[in-house]
Image (cartoon, rainbow, N blue to C red; front, side, top):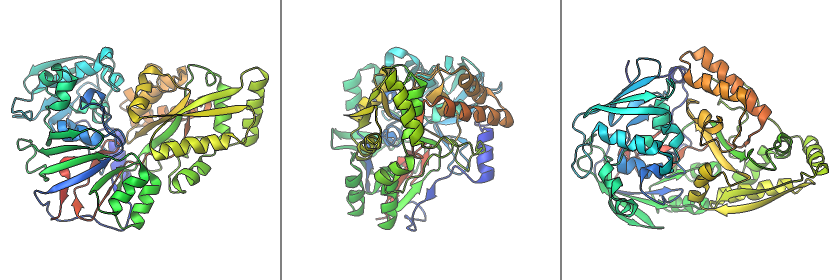
Length: 515
């Protein structure tokens, strides 16, 4: 069996879904890549550490940093969504996902010249699995019961339960980024000063709150990549500033999460690349505590909030709403609606709860990004039209928001479950056993359907399981779906090689620039 390919990937290929698409009439640099030169990439946030255990493998979380310093074990094909090799030559299962064999390419080396071997992958995966590490992806890593480096280039992986599509857990998490174990053992400050991985770039300088300056790794395995001599990564949290910087030529590429910015970029004749995904952004309602441990409070909020009005006020109407859990291009699409606003029902439920001494009063935790703040304020404005409900807004930095996955100290906040294949994101987002289950929902029927969807190798069985998942999410209301995720990049016409994998993880080794 070759690198793991799922029924989802094959179905995507058949229907033409999953690829990156241009969002404007402008076209970037074409032809053979030009070697050399420098480029500046704008990120949506700045990492608090370069330790990949704490990195987020998505666009908003600064995945470009992890891809640059550590490379990738696996990737996804931009046209089909299938798992493809990178540092790993193959990732195979011969028993339906009970065990896997990860084979590394021979001769790989870390950026300091030392051998990159299977023992390093084992050390990294074992560390991520340890709850004491505190990784965002502990739940993904905990699916692995044990690992054994059977040779310098081979890792045997035994799962806690059969997960045929475990490759998607690797490719969408920091399991994909392997640091040198000895460098990690030296401590956080030492690693941030000199991170050692097997990626296309090495750190030259990190000016916090300003820029990470990276230089080409001459020993990178996939020559002639990387094409650029130097890459500068700058945080640009404010959406307007990010777009203005691109329009003025102050940067070459911007990771983008705003539908309105994509629309404006197209109007400014910039190049946009968007990767279609199912799922999307949502408001996670913490069912572990009041007020949202009461189903009626969740139902009331779902009936009160009008996603289309939010789209207009926050994204200028440019966003794509999550009307169904699965995108129309997905083979799991059934047309089951995620819900619709009903003001009369909302007010009735708010009144009913207040009469019982359970007035719906909660805090919405938002990040400091302009889009997130605007979303929180728009939700607050909508709720002001109702009686017996009160919402406060708390603004935190992105890194603080990420910590909520482990502390669960929130009432409501923005989260995301975007995916090509529903494994692993739907399980990690909504399964009772997942540490990344932000809402804390624990529904036996939902849990069973999620397990069936992730463990079955039959396309028909998986579709039936995820149909049940859709229905239970609508009935439980652990979240309120908003817009599809923007897994996108904006670039100038001089830039070529804008490629993404997973759900919006920009690949810096592919970038090149016309001189």
